[in-house]
Amino acid sequence: MTIFVAMRRQWFVLGLLMLGFASVARAESAPGIPPETPEQRDARMKWWRDARFGMFIHWGLYAIPGGRWKGQPVGGAGEWIMNTANIPVEEYELLAKQFNPVKYNPAQWVKIAKEAGMRYIVITSKHHDGFCLFDSKVTTYDVVDATPWGKDLLKPLAEECRKQGLHFCTYYSIMDWHHPAQMRGSDRAYNPTRIREGRKREYMDYMKAQLKELLESCKPEVLWFDGEWPDWYTEEDGREIYAYLRELDPKLIINNRVGKCRKGMEGLNQEGRQCVGDFGTPEQQIPASGLPGVDWESCMTMNDTWGFKYDDHNWKSTQTLIRNLIDCASKGGNYLLNVGPTAEGEIPAPSVERLQGIGQWLRVNGESIYATQASPWSKQLPWGRCTQKKLDDGTTRLYLHVFTWPEQGRLELPNLKNDVSRAFLLANGTGVTAHRDGDKVVLENLPQKPLDPVATVICVDIKGTPQVD
Ligand code: H79
Image 1 (cartoon, rainbow, N blue to C red):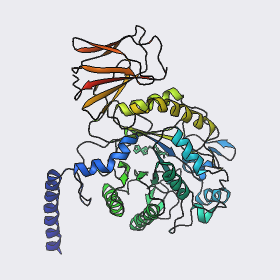
Image 2 (tube, protein in one colour):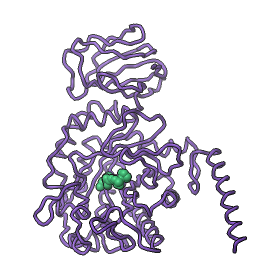
Image 3 (cartoon, rainbow, N blue to C red):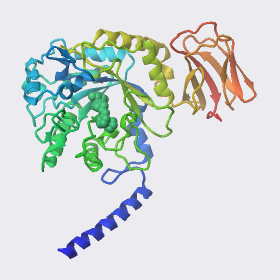
């Protein structure tokens, strides 16, 4: 026995050495995950990188109480009410009998997203409460088996997305306050759950079965994991799920919350670790600067909740939302903006209004957002933001998003070495004069007033790759 243990330890040490070596040889893929060349990865990520703007949808049983329980307002996010109000499982489950979203109109939802300029939709297939919006064969706690509605909610949305040309994606929570293999973290709360003795494998298999069902029934193009923080779930578990999914669908894109590498709400991976997942997930925030070579997506609410809440009227302005989208694009990231439909199936009017406003701006200025790259300037520009795109003839087009319109009709591009071949206002094509002044390029004869007070875009074409100090 002792010899056996000693030998196993030797193998373990050898294994560790080999792992270390492998990670030097091909830093791209973690153990257990199919290798991929940078070109293959670029091809897989292309649609997502180009898309820049998506709709997050948080929908589930929590929309019924909508942030109120037994006549009392409950603080925090609406989708957390089961935890926050510490509602017993048997009591929360009863909500399913009331879930009947008769106003659900997936064609209308997709139209709202499309007209907002969103290129993909990510919807909760199962949130922390464990209730499934799809027809799962491994539980009866789903919309088909447990509600008067009795029909899959995700399949028709997936079909509508494909019909209207949007990419369909699903969210899935690893933490589950309803599954019998998990138990509440304390008397006061479910979060963070603990795993019941010896039942981890059962839950891993449950997740895999459900994820396979989802892939087969809805063909999501992104799997957006969340709720990975309970201690019983490990980076190794994440690699198992990631490898399993990529084997089922080699083109699938999976966020970094499938593993355990993210830095809290900042959402990007911890440095110096081998991390599973294809993109970082800042939540309710935008990174301070761009991160060369890193794919990321900031998810954000329009008010202060993800799931619908009757009493949350703290809406961000359309201006803030548009500038957030620009901010993300200028740092090379995507913006995933949330809506929380009502239990009846309607996207709240304040959300729709804002989405229409964003759509209006994008119809004029979308060229400056979609399929662009991060600003060549690493530090923030005083008047706004910048994105860029390589044109076919080797020209680089800089898109200057001006937030603060200059009163003297003069705008400075600091430390730009390239000469300008052409400059004009994106919205109406009006030419802008550009000349060099030492280290900087100066744009002049700009109109007195911005074309759009939220952000007016100036296109600046330069030869070759931007040289910025
Ligand atoms: O689905 C929405 C929210 O319900 C969910 N994520 C978005 C997309 C969410 N769950 N929790 N939170 C947001 C905030 C939780 C933060 C914490 Fe932690 C979890 C604090 C400690 C554990 C994450 C992990 C931040 C630090 C470690």
